[in-house]
Length: 260
Image 1: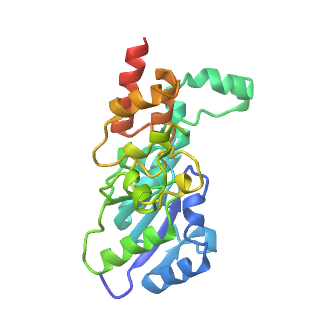
Image 2: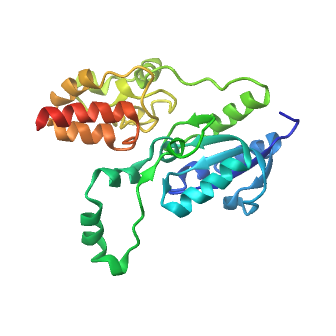
């Protein structure tokens, strides 16, 4: 890439957490602006959605034809498209609506079709267009995004995190929540990268950084059953954030099949 590639940051259905990770702390945005020429980033007041860019950072899942049309334009005008966060990489929480009776919950929430517009299914970006790199997390971290962009500028392929979260817990000398029976943790099937944040505060991992390269949902399900969780409850944990991810779906489907 050139000395200072151009960048666009685009948002679809999300909570804005991944974009906020690029703004707080302020030093993250400053370094981002030093590395690249930011052309489009509505959160900081830069609006140029039709400009072509070298790199597009895409946050959020796609739902409905309007979103899809906009995404296709982003893909057409970007050299590299990088998804940031769980919503963009695997559908996020809003993708759970694809597992439910959509008409039923819409009627329960809004009363009838006179008061709502069908939002369509929520899907990850890669289900609709070609994606060059995925950065997992809920949200991603500014450090994570900056490291990937530095690698790309140097002509290197950003390194995917191969380890499970359990390795980060061990390095931080955290007592295993799963082994001690303190909490039903998803660490064994979740990729590292968050710094074992939740276990560091005594909470179980709920899988926000996505599935690790090697997952054994069946073995983890047996351990979670030891906490008194029934198969349907365990399946919901596997699907909570990453219901569009094949590994998480397979693990949940096995459990749901076992219970039926």
